[in-house]
Length: 470
Image (cartoon, rainbow, N blue to C red; front, side):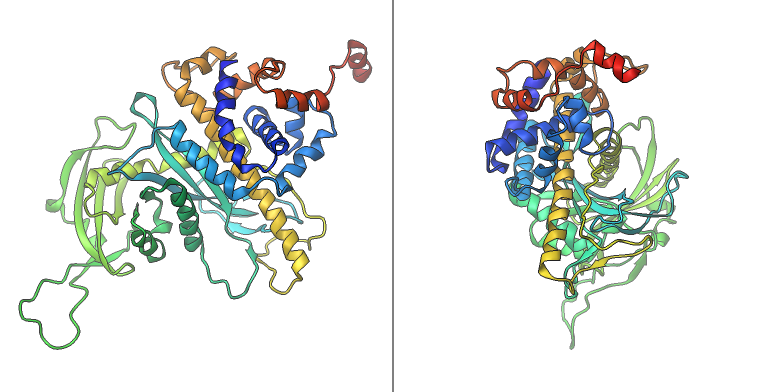
């Protein structure tokens, strides 16, 4: 019961996102379903895990399309709540935000923004081309128990598949920067964005630096930079030089004498010695100095890292980039445990999408059709955002109430370690085992109990069970 008390106290911070109290109660029911369900089969899984009547299905479905739930306000409330529930990982008084993209497979022919997507992966179970939604996500790096860190999902949005205007020239890089700025406006703190090599671009770095933020990423192996122009006491005629001598990072990686040996700062790596070289060079996409760190790992080979913060130590840059994989682990939990990307909302009046097609161009359609598409896209975003919140609430219980989670865990694991924070799967199992008791205590949430009494499905008798089996 204590777990649900802590869970409900944290969920109360999302109340300002709902215009009506009834909307908030239904949103809490959806969050309970996301945290406790054992399958990801759409809204019907919420009805099953909460033991509701079939009439509740349409109420839950309406929540994702309701105007009473403000998506932007919901995201802002969750970002503020994360700063209260968790202890953020700070680098020189800057928050660390992880960024990455995920592709959610979708076979629905009447789902807006579904397009043909290419996957680059060495996994044999992932096909090269799929139909689905392309999303970009942000996660907040926080401290956990035992000196570990965790990535708390902040928000995720669909950034491909729909073209409302042929004059719109925004790329995925522009959209991820805009999404990051929407988060920083709530935090009111500078951030260090950690991302992979796809985001190593002037379109990302320039607006970040302009607003006081920084980027740590991986540079491509064929990257080229320039030495700073030496100062000239008596400048000559004409425009002064901007770039000095051209330098290839691959050539710098072959100079053994310039490398320094140091123990690896990457988490979960002990007794590993690596070599690194650091150089502040002018990078042409940005037009000024950035810090390049070339790292030689004894098992993983050579990697080229880039940081826009020239005061950051080389091993600190490597440590931050090592934490980037935390967002990948968060995606795995969001897909297999939470089902954050398992929405199945179709649009009845939509033109069918054929397999292998690209973006859906809507600039020649009427205003009513575009409004319907935006309404359905907003429903997808609300489902994903509630999935991020549900995963974050599970992590809140895992990090801040570890002992209580292990106490309520009614199963067994071969690698169980009660001293460490459990995974989201274990927390969900603990919540699921105590859910019936929580729903029968009206003093914890009177409004929630009133809704459950109205829509709760009565228990079947033994005769009805025998009749169904027959």
